[in-house]
View 1: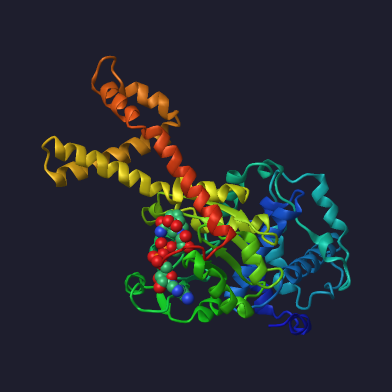
View 2: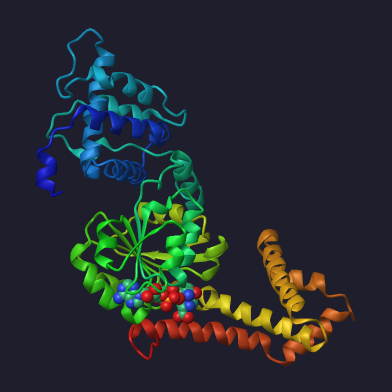
Length: 431
Ligand SMILES: NC(=O)C1=CN([C@@H]2O[C@H](COP(=O)(O)OP(=O)(O)OC[C@H]3O[C@@H](n4cnc5c(N)ncnc54)[C@H](O)[C@@H]3O)[C@@H](O)[C@H]2O)C=CC1
Ligand SMILES: O=C(O)[C@@H]1CCC=N1
């Protein structure tokens, strides 16, 4: 719906009631102490929920409506016997919910907040002035912010429509992680040119299509999960259909935000992300960087959507290629090591299947201990090494084989390759 059309439409009772229920449900009282950007997050969540329910209002329109409602509330509070406020038709229908929202304010709210008592507004009032505020306590800690957002709205993403362009291993891994959260399969749509990879998505109850454009038309968050050399082709195809409703997330190795932004319409919210395959079992390691138009709340939304995939971190774009070497590809380096461990045991006489299952459990156990204790790997290594014992003999052999240097070189080579793909996306990339 275009903006001019939206502006002309008056709010009806059902729409206003839904809006207030959403604000009440989002526990607005927690957001009332002084931060514009947090406030935007709340209205953005409300916007997405309203859209999912079929009401197409912009974030600014929601803020303005809230401001009028708040103004009416204060008028009534000051003069209970005065005639009903005229700015909100049928005010009496909303009064109870407004009281419930306004009078359950969070104890953190300071005097600054009460300045909104002066909100005597007209239709021409400055929308920005109606900003709500977030608690000071969640200002500088991303994880805490995320937790708060999710806590505020455990259903935050449940109405979001998620699309995948490309139905390969990575799309499948991320999908499995997302489904472990509160997204239902019917809210996901996946496209690929052939049916070859789509069957396993169907088995999860996910809708499939051969049309990338259909995916964009039916999604709020669009993951582009095709091989890097196909990114320009796919983005050029979907570009005319991308709007400000969308967050476009590319997971393609090497492909830069600049490339995404160059092809997609101006102002598109883009995010570049590097996941890894263990998303499939909710043990992924994901790093993302936001594009020029992606706001902090877009990052928060992505984190909350993906937090069942595993560790989700945000960083500068320059780290994305490094993360590709460390973790995107690093998973394969660990598999190679696991395979070699098992082969060593086979060489010494153990049956292959037992050797492989013990190798995988060894990698899993070592990884969990490393992550859960937070200890440096060298510390844990020393805890395994008895002086003159077996481990130090084995470690010596590994060092003689240059395992440390070759592992570092592997991360370096994969990082450089990702950088190279970013410089010339089609260079030597094979399907
Ligand atoms: N496999 C991995 O472990 C990781 C992969 N990535 C990235 O994820 C992306 C996808 O990689 P994989 O899933 O491994 O590849 P894949 O080859 O398993 O999947 C690619 C998918 O794209 C589909 N496709 C091809 N042309 C298309 C088009 N024009 N429109 C829509 N779909 C099309 C294919 O049919 C296939 O389903 C790559 O860019 C890669 O760099 C990132 C991190 C880890
Ligand atoms: O090998 C690749 O290019 C992709 C990116 C990271 C893992 N797999």
